[in-house]
Image (tube, rainbow, N blue to C red; front, side, top):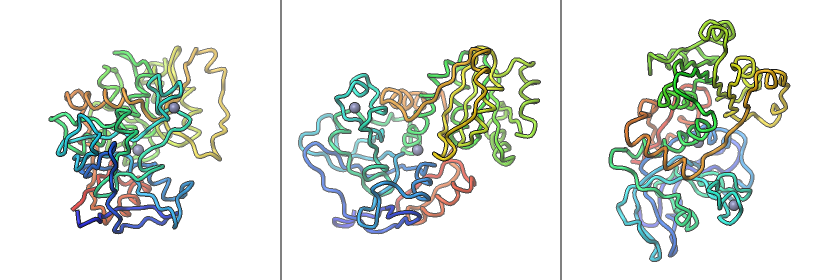
Amino acid sequence: MNGNKMRAAALYGKRDLRVAEADLPSINAGEILVQVKGAFVCGTDVRMFHNGYDGVSEAAPLILGHEGSGVVARIGRHVEYFKEGMRVAVAPNIGCGICDFCVSGNTHLCSQYKALGIHMPGFFAEYIKIPAGFVRQGNVVEIPDTLSFEEAALAEPLACVFNAFEKSKLRPGETVLIIGAGPIGLMHAKMAQTAGAEKIILNDLSRERLDLCRQLDSTFITVESDTLKEDIDSLTEGRGVDVCITACPAPQAQQVALELAAINGRVIFFGGLPPDKAHVSLNTNLIHYKQLEVTGTTRQSLSQYRRTLRLVACGRISIKDLISSRTALEEIQSALDNISQARSLKSAIYFE
Ligand SMILES: [Zn+2]
Ligand SMILES: [Zn+2]
């Protein structure tokens, strides 16, 4: 803390990210100030950088970053339970708190949904203010002793994956295909492992990425796109895969997922598509005759977020090996560039 100033990376508009001095947030009675210790760049940050974002402008810059953790630096006088010095992870999504989705625990589906680093200042700063609504809603979670700040920050994207995992109803002995072998695809693969999947197959356009998957875990099976259908056929003795997850923004992946799914298979559209590509022609007879369950998931509920933290803390799933680089806040632009060119898995941001 340098007086009332801190370093922060803020978006000012399309392709205009600046690392500069910002005012240290002041907190009111219900709020918490967190010193950021773990933060990750995500595809969402990259998209916001390349496309700009509604409401973000030269006059209204936004500090990015929605995957983060840190230490409680200050608490408002009405805040209970939390203490200065406590290590905390913060779920970034908040709902209105009173609609039926929020009341049922699905604040991430609220029509008034907002997120840190997307609609309000995020984690790419030395300090972040956690607004009172987040504190009251239960978004701030004490980090289990066994977890590092970085692992705790990575629980956010992993919790999105956990949401899809629950929908997939994956059972021991089943076969899973994940199309898109980036960091999120690998998280799906690791999650499938915890459920006792028999074969965990990853597909990607990039051969490099597939090599990386096998280096990370030699039990992962990788298949290239040119031979995808034949390979799935021989790996499953013609049955198809029980669960297929699309973890990439490609319409073709959704089409092929229906073809490769087994009878009674489950297909999860995890990765969203660019708006101009979202109308996809699907062979719905595949859904009909194979009795497929086709669904999508987005974000994560708070209970899924907390459960994911516990899952990592108990050692059932390890995500440390997904951290492929560490970049100082001042160099954050290079971390964004590496992700847009698919040159890294998860890129941690650190603060000197
Ligand atoms: Zn993210
Ligand atoms: Zn709501």
